[in-house]
Length: 469
Image (cartoon, rainbow, N blue to C red; front, side, top):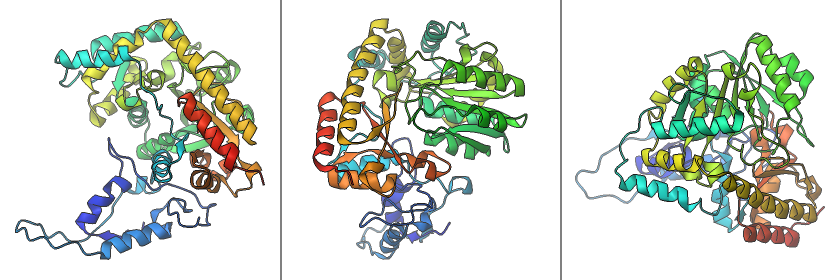
C-alpha cells in the first residue's frame, strides 16, 4: 500500500480517521472496484478498498504533509521526523466502517440518520439505575475475566428460558465487550490459519475482518432478494470435510431475514455430517416480528458444536455499553476464553451488574419492545413504499432493505450520496457487506430504531425531494 508522509501533528489529527480504537472508528471506507467513477466533491466515495486508490484522500494527506505548523518556541518540543502511515497486511483492505462514515456525513449535511443502527432514544430507567447503584456500591474494579457470577447466572437463566437448554454459567458462558468482541474471540480462539469458514452474504462487516486476522479462508454464499432464502444446493456443494465452521446471523443484518426451521435443520444436518462448527450471532433475537426466533444450539445434536453470541445493546437500547457474551460447551469455551483473555481480559464491572437486572426483566418488557418496534417498522415500510422503493420483507432486526433502482442512480453508493446531500436522509449502501460488491449494488438499508417523529420526518423529506427517473 502506498503511504503518504505527514508530520506527527498531522498524524495525530488523522489518527481518529484512520484507526479504530474503543472510542473512535475510521472515516474512510472500503469500496470496491466497480465504483470507479468519483462523485463531485466527495472524497468519501472512491472506488477501491486500498487507500492509495482514493485520489482526493491521498491529495488531502499530501497537502497536510506539506503544510507548515506554527513554530513552537517551547524548548521541549520534540523534533519528530516524518513517518508513513502503517497497517498490517492482513488489515490493509479494511479501511473505514461504513456506519461511522455515514454518521459523519449525516452530521455534515444535517441529514436524518436512518443508516447506523443505534436508537435515538434511551434505554430503560430500571437498567440505568442498576448501573448507577453498582457504581455507588463500589463495583468499579476489574471483573472476573469471564464475567461476574451474577451476570453469568442471569445469562444462563435467560438462555434456558429461551431455548430450554440448561448450561453451566461457570464453564459455558463468557462475558465480552459487546458481541463484536465475542465474534473476535470466537474466530481468534477457534479458527486456525487456512481453515475454511462459510459466510452468508450480505454480512456484518466485522466477520470478514476478524476472519482475516485469524488467517481463515472465507467461502461465501449469497442470499438473494426478495426473500434472501438459503440456496441449499449451493450450500451442499460448498460445505465439505475441509470446512471448519459456518457463521449464521439470525435475525439477519442487514436484510431482516430470519432463518427458517427448515433452513436451520438442513444446515445442522450438514454440519453434523461434515463435523463443522457453527458460530451464531443472535443479537436481534428479541426483535423477531414475523416468526419465532430459533437458536441453532437448541436443535438436536447442535449444542456441542455451536457458539451462540449475543449482547445487551439491541434489546435494551444501550448500544454504548458494549456488553456481550458467548455461550458454548466447555471444549469450545476454552478457546473463546483464551482469546478473550488477551483481547480485553474483562468487561465493565458495573455494567455487568446492570445487565443482570436487564436480563431479569419481565416478559412484559420484551412484548412491549416488540410492539413498539412493529409500530416503527410500519411507519417506515409504508413510507418507503409510498416514496417508490421496492421494499423487501423484514421478519426481524430493526432494518429494512430496499431496491433503489427506480430512482435512476448508478449504484448504491451513488444513491446514498445523493440521498444525503440532496434529500437529507441517510441510508447504508449494502455493497460493502458482500465479497462481490456487484451483488449489493441495487440495494440500500434503512433502520427504524428511531422515534416515530424522526421516521415520519425522514419519509416526508423523501416524498418531497426524491423522484423516480
